[in-house]
Each structure stands twice: as structure tokens, then as C-alpha cells.
Length: 473
Image (cartoon, rainbow, N blue to C red; front, side, top):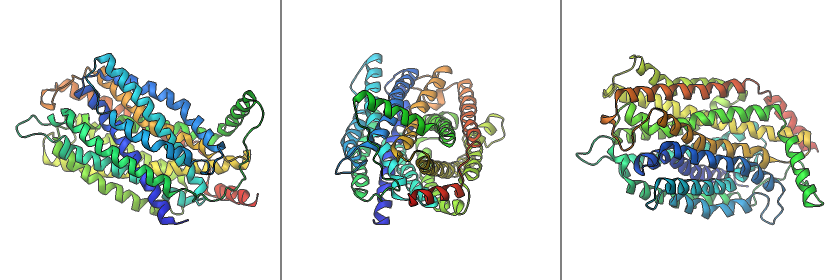
């Protein structure tokens, strides 16, 4: 297999995910609530209901991809089937017809459910390829960093163009008024949908027939009646996920994704309404974040080489809490550069770059740790169930969008955030409430994630022992 082609394929998967996640996390709430006029709590409710379908579909698709037998392999039938639906549904999520509140809610709910189910067909099987492609402790982190870096870089690049071109403030308009332009969202996400189609195709064909032989011959397809097969599936699934390290990473990942989803859904609100930045300033800030993606990609192999993943992840996560909520808390207490000053703008660029780098590194390390759990469970169960276990990554990633938008929507509804308003017209009391809720909720989610990590027990030495056992069977 060509390492370069594998790297390009994983990066392409990340780019496609990043473009879709960028739209769902950063722009969907503000588009439906501020531009289309949907009540933000209804937008949050739609995302919450879609998450219920995710909770069901992710492990089912994962387990199905573990057991399917075809001349295309276990994962690629799903990868090929997801290419067109993701691209088409994503575009129509933005190109909305004129609808009432209830009609718009049903439209958002229906398309979000279909999009997330389609994403499951790609993300779960593709992530399950990671332990099949490499068993190396550090190489897994490198491949996950390609997915994460590609995702962040592509999503950020699109956001830069959104604020610099499609949503830029027109001359003479109020600062931030460009974010209310419906045509900008439609045009931008048509381009995004085309790129998503291309990248999903590259990621699927680039890994086709390039999976290494499994350490355990996976012949676990049950026989007998349908009822017996279902019973065997649930018993095996219960046994597989009944693992301390798996539960720890699932809880930590869910809390961390809730934090990042809340951050993403409220980012435009905080930058525009709390800090008072104009669209062109937000675009410049996002350009600087592109360098953060490159920096993270360079730093990951350096900081992870020879180190245990758990303590490294905890340290990086603590730093992320400081850099993501620190400026807001300092500003609320009058200890940060004043709003409208150039010092504030440059300070936020610096904080944002560090924060972005830390986000990419923590996400990459978390994914690598879950891949290690797959081999640990294979030693115990003698089954290869990458799809079932790694479906947690798909669920966590989509929680980042769904639960984050839901939380952001409820917070905005709680403080009675007005629709179709510019930063200059927003009451100071609402600005202050936005800042406090943002910082407190974000910090709480991050700290819960870090607390859960303290119970993780799988070490580098144990992983090496697991690989040795599997390769001799």
C-alpha cells in the first residue's frame, strides 16, 4: 500500500467532514434563527431529535460494517453509498423554500436526520479503517491528525471565505449585517457540497483494497433464525462495549464534543455581538487559524513521540479550557483590552490560534486512544469489531454539531436574544449574559471531559502487548 495515497485519502475524508461540520456547527443556528427567523429553541430541538436517530444508527451501521461480506470488503460498500446523499442533502439544507415556523422546523428536522444518517455511512466505516490500516501506537495518531487537521483547515478556510466574500458587510451597512444575507449562505454551501462530493470520492477510492489483513480472522457472522442473530448481536455488542477504557473515552468524548459544539454554534455570536468584531475582522481571525492547523499537524508527532497518551491529553485539555474561556472571563471582569481596540483584536488572534491548535491535537489523540481500545477488546473477545467500537467517534463528532447547536439555541432563548439584530442594537445586559453563559457552560463541559479521562488505564506497554498477542494468534 502507498503511505502517501493513504495519507491523502484520510486527509480528504477530513476535508469533507470539516466542510459539513463547519456549516452545521458554526452557521446553521445563526442561519435558521437570524436569517430565516426560526425560533432558536426550535432549531435546537430539531438537532436534538436528529441526535436520537444518530444514537441508534451509529452502532448499528458500525456493527453491520463489521459483519458484512462483499467483494468490496467490509467498509467500502458504505463509503461508496454515502457520497451522493451527503453532498445533495447538505446543499438543500441551505437552499430552503419559503415556509412557516412549523414548516421550517419540519424541513430542518427532516434534512438534518437524513444528512446525519448519510454521514454515518461514511464516518463510522471510514474511522473503522484506522486499526485495520496500521497497528503502530504513534502512526495511528498521525493518521487521525490528518483527518482532524484536514477537517479543521477546510472548515476554517470556508468560514474565511464566508466572512470575506459571501457574508462581507456591504459599504454603508451596520457592522455584522452581512451575516443576515441568505444568498451568501446558499452560494457558499453549493461550492462546499461540490468539494465534499470530490473529497468523499477520493477518500473511498484511495483506500479501496488497501486494508491490511486482520490479526484475527473475523468470521463472526452468526447463523440461524433472525431472532437468534439479533440476540447474538446484542449479547456480543454488550460484551464488547462493557470495557472500562471504552466507557471512559465515550463519556470524556461526549462532554468534550458538547463543549466544542457549544463553542462552534455560538462563535459567530460571541465574535460579532460580544467582542464587536466586523465581518472582515472575523475573516482575518479565521485566516490566522489556518496557520494553527498547520502548527498542530507539525506539533502532534513531536509532543506525542515516546509519551503516554492519557497524561498528554489531560494537559492539552486543561490548556484548552484556559484559552477558550479565559478572554471572556477576563473581559467580563474588566481585565482585558477594551471592546473596539486594536489590542483586543490582536490578542484574540493570538488566543484563537493557540486554542485552535489545542483543539486539533486533543481530537487527534482521543481518536488514536479509541483505536487502541479496539485491539484491547479483540484480545478479550477474539472478534474484530472496529465498526461497533469506533462508531462512538461518529456519534461524538455529530454530538459536536447536534448537541452544541441545541445548547447554543437554548442559551440564546434563555436570555431572549433578539432575531435580526445587529451588534450596535443589542442591549448591554444581553451581551453580558451571553458572555457569562458561554464561559460557564463551556468550562463545565471541558472539565467533565478531563475528569472522565482520569479513569483511563490503557498504556503504551499494554498496547504493545496486545498487538504481540494478536499477531501470534
